[in-house]
Image 1 (cartoon, helix red, strand yellow):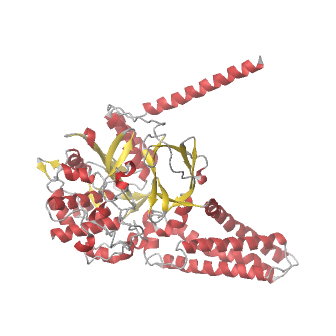
Image 2 (cartoon, helix red, strand yellow):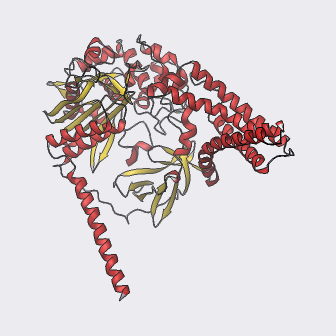
Image 3 (spheres, one colour):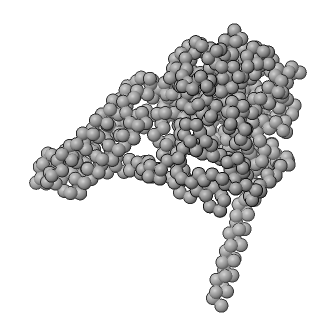
Length: 630
């Protein structure tokens, strides 16, 4: 009888649980805006909850402008609201026009995407160790397959109010133009690569990049104020930039073609219509549909361009999968501003979101609401997944970490944060981040060593044979295999580092009290306990200085990207930390027979060894004695 009661109780609990889940899912569905009024209210709510000053939002369907509106404040201090003419910083949306310019010049017969950049611009310095067999071509620059870095701190730290010419900007820091992999074998987002492509536009057209874009695109499209420069109009109607409640100055980006574009919601209406009308606007065919089709596909990777995972990448244009629908476009982010531009080619609609706040998630949330609204009446094409059709032919089981971090100087933490474990069970590929507990994702084989996410039904992972790293995993980045020992060593470093810092303070203070109040006045014992603390004091200086100085992303750029008191202090502290960590180990083991508390001695010895390990890891990642501003 008790067994029956327990079974009935369990059944009731399961029914209640499923009912609550269904209710939660229904509530989530109900929260999706189905009217323009509901969409506007949801946008206002997000801005209020996230304390984001303002936003410009555009929705277009065919030739009809559904919404072009401002929300919140463009200028908090002067209580100025956002409107359709308020100009926002669009960040990397800028790159779209670099690709458009190259395509237009190709249509006119002035160049070809397959042209080698060495032949076109021999005066621009770059280093490609594989140039003879795998030269960098224009399409490599536009598809981010040149192997060049995304940014260096020195480039981010440049904020010259006097606009540099594009040639001056490219001459400023040629170190970022070194290919880390064979061009055409991977994708590595590169701001400098896009600006080199813009320089080709200048070289071929005989105009500055800004003038060429203005003459060939902005004016014909009816964009009166869109600009790559801080014009008088921008000073008059530009939204003020805010990060963490702090008002920021205009950031004079080194590579303007890559990230300096400024535009209003009114301008973005025309940009969206240009794309959904396939290069035609104001009865003027500025670019052919075939050129836009090339913009929307990848051809610079001979092998990977044929795989499903990489088909969505194009020339400054990438696919975004949303509930079975494929948007295309580009996002952008700068200190104090974020933007997203996207269009749905198959249904002739698009949107743009611009905010004058630093939180990228805010722009993404608003974009998500817009996608919900735009696709609410569209019929989704079901993704038919045959789980029995394909089998896993290559076993990728093991531990992985990222190959190339976005910025070398923060690679030491990226290599740890991105550690993932992969394994196969019942012909399903599982992947998780050990640092994130139970964050397991599942993939099923889709053929050609590609895998489809069980959750999204989209192909999101591929097994690739890289010519330099061998078998790697591509899933939102490139992951190379590492041993389980090294994986857990890196994780242990991350965990042990703050513990070591804290414990050296505690033990150092305790032994000081013992020394002052006790009978044991051994200065050697005191030094044994103090050397790990002295070693870590250089880390404390860096941490405290950073906490005092850094309040926004822009502060990070200036702090590490220019030669200043703090960046020099960090440089000196890194060297002192390295010397002290070596000396600590030597001194403590030299005096291992000193009469003192074994607990205190063993702690000092362990802390000294760990500091030496930390230092060697920092050294291997270029953080010891390396000036970040050079």
